[in-house]
Length: 177
Image 1 (tube, rainbow, N blue to C red):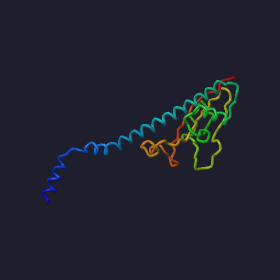
Image 2 (cartoon, rainbow, N blue to C red):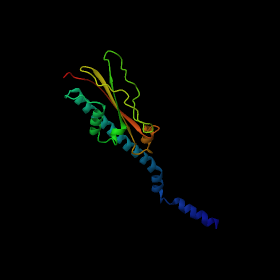
Image 3 (cartoon, one colour):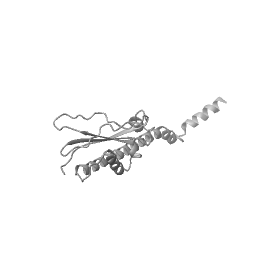
Image 4 (cartoon, helix red, strand yellow):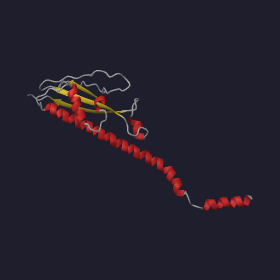
């Protein structure tokens, strides 16, 4: 009986059937993990590029002094209309516009003021429309939900609310009309 069992195990050991399946079971999760991280990074990059472009186009309109003096809500609506990949843009984007003296070091807070979905919405942090020839800093911060929150990139980017923050900062001067 034991001889039969030993010969059956020896025969089984010589067979190579199933080697590919074992290798696949070991390697596939790691490759899938990397693919999801790459997709998440691509989506983050796309949304950040859209936010940067929307802010740049909006600031271009302001800088060229097209005859309007846009307020906070107007600027936010313009940015959101141009940032098509950012979902719920009106509620997830927060703007800051700060007057800056060009002869002094930057006085813009280093940490952007983003929306926090767990708190009651705070009023606009700082928003001053500049006068002609005045240096202005505009910063937009958007909170975005990750597409794959369990991927390596999704886990690395999220904060305590399960979102990641994208910021776009630009400096411009109001041209005289």
